[in-house]
Length: 240
Ligand SMILES: NC(=O)c1ccc[n+]([C@@H]2O[C@H](COP(=O)([O-])OP(=O)(O)OC[C@H]3O[C@@H](n4cnc5c(N)ncnc54)[C@H](OP(=O)(O)O)[C@@H]3O)[C@@H](O)[C@H]2O)c1
Image (cartoon, rainbow, N blue to C red; front, side, top):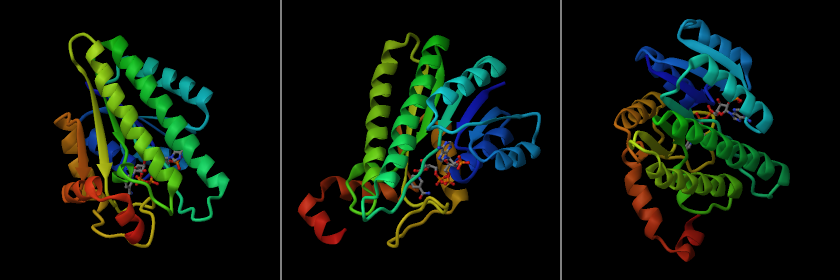
């Protein structure tokens, strides 16, 4: 049987991917801060789901929770990092920026590293991280969020490079870059091409199965990614 861990499984993409993994026969350990929602998810299939409350900003707790899950599952095949936050923060309120950095940078780094070290020890495993199309450029409304996503994609690329150090080439890193997906995370007024959670999760799950290196969700966001990569900053400044 294949085992998975999903960080950020209480809602949105993480919750949907948990349901798909369970349906596919995986045993899944789920985490997040909202214990009631974790319990609710477990009640849908109690034998296949393990629950652990975890705030990814608390690095000591995360390490402990990770160790507990690994010892309960024995081996882990897939680790999905879907925990994340973001704010519209035009006034650069430090508390919002710091909250974002603690969750999306510090919390994410720890989970990526714990996953990578475990997979190195096991000799196999698949790290899947939900970053964002936001990783490609800056943004005046949510600076910390966009910068944190750039950090995530570069860190993931580093781990992808590092995976070649592991014998057997059975450690994979998948970077999922959604555009807008219909969850509470979809930020801002200028929302367009919003994918339903169902459609986005199906495309993400398919990318996981194919062990894709990187994928934009939904597919049409490939076009936006291409544009974002070539538009000069002075033009972005005019339109953003
Ligand atoms: N929706 C979009 O349009 C979109 C686009 C691009 C990228 N993304 C990325 O997709 C990922 C998932 O977001 P989503 O759209 O599914 O939104 P969501 O429904 O708000 O899910 C966010 C998840 O992160 C968890 N989380 C937040 N802070 C946490 C903390 N301190 N400790 C532990 N868990 C924490 C939440 O659990 P608790 O609150 O229970 O802790 C929740 O399960 C995020 O990284 C987001 O940046 C989303």
